[in-house]
Length: 333
Image 1 (cartoon, rainbow, N blue to C red):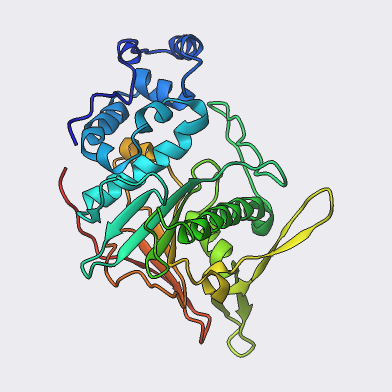
Image 2 (cartoon, rainbow, N blue to C red):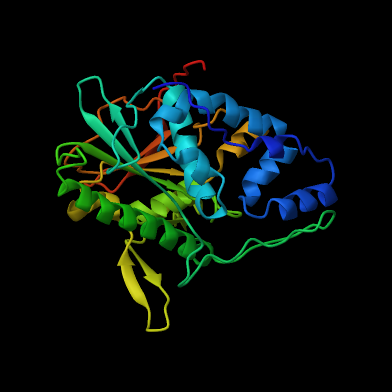
């Protein structure tokens, strides 16, 4: 492929650098046809904009041909930014990421050392229309806020959005399998990559993911009668979750990654932050990736393929859930 000429950020935006909130508000009003996040980064976050621009020339061939245009749209930006986020991490770690030549099929394909195809289908969580995630509060500078409440109540709507995202992409994957034109085989690995950046607030990514796919509820302790000391923690098993709707409550499974009917999903990749959160805070992008591996996958991800983030697994014999860092390797840009 020839070097791409499309820009992620329109040139006229880059020329409109701002330094105050009033100037930012004016830029947003002037470019209201574009994504709010895109405009904000373009005119007020030069380091983040440079990160995107530097990687764009490296990553465009792994993304859809109309990626640059969609990246600029409010309706598309969040999903496209998550795809860019994933591509940057896969590239950084030297994985055999395949050039995007297909028009029907998952977002990414990685070839393992043994030739095994690992397909990655990306989706970004929304707040939802039924039983939605509450909007983030508008915080005022200089005021100290306190929050609290039942952990399950706080996590439940967010877990529902993660489950909805997984279910949506799994149904799409089943259509790919029956489509001879997309190149996805039943013997290939499937990873559903979920971004929770839009739904997280005062919550923990690992807690949400474990609750969603392994039925891991809040930790509990018990008091030893002999020593009078607390013993634990032990997680509360919560294999289902309740969705509230006008027609009545619906009980849904929350243990996808140990259920045989979902064993075609090799792993669920989850991240609760945007890439620019890492850029701004000085963390390596991808360090916060969480991989929940199916306990009995039909096509397990080749051992050691992903040498970054954390690997989460559940042993079906003793129900023990482990969460361990995956060996780190970094490929310079």
